[in-house]
Image (cartoon, rainbow, N blue to C red; front, side, top):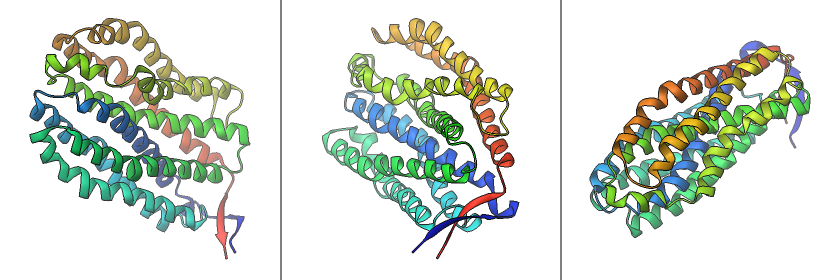
Length: 322
């Protein structure tokens, strides 16, 4: 029977940088797969013209945005087993490895072989039923389970931090990198698809995903860290100062303000009424300077926060003994 104990370990055994990369990839892949399965797939069967152009864009960009990070997560999970075997009970790593492996198998043997069919036939009933069901059971559900395990691992790794402070910090970390995954799908895949969608398909394409579904998958998780960061001015792990909390909060606030005051009323609302290639090109042109730079700042600041908390934590980790 396994029991969990705390023991002192050297800095070499802790390897917080590898745990950081693993955790980032877990939450990133969850955000990406949620957007693809619940905001992209439901709209793809509305594409009747420009099929080759639309799915050509999707097939090229999804490899970089989702497939490659998923494969990296698998190898990172395996590496975490070898480099930090005493961080947490071994069954957790076996489960995490299994979940990431299932996503890689679906990519290699289902999604990538389906790309030529998409280019020629589009997202018809046959491929839709196959991809949506397989993706749900072998990508979406495993991604959620793997994110839960990542949360469990981080909770154990920072066990010495006050529980309320710890949950606030891990919650912010998880939501930030969930946002990065979802945001990359929206900005690098979907915006490019919009430029080649036929105007005749546009309104049906835009209306295919209920606004409540889009908000719950993308918008609400993207801005919810604001509500967790405010109490972190008073309740935060050792190693995080109020200045660092402010550095993370500012890009979130900026993105919220610029989205509500410019992107939604000036671009998204008009695009909901009629197709406009100039508006889409304006959206793509202004995305990086107005929101992309803030997202980069948010990514860097959150990663630094993670490493600072790890550095200031006590020299104990949780390990399993037979």
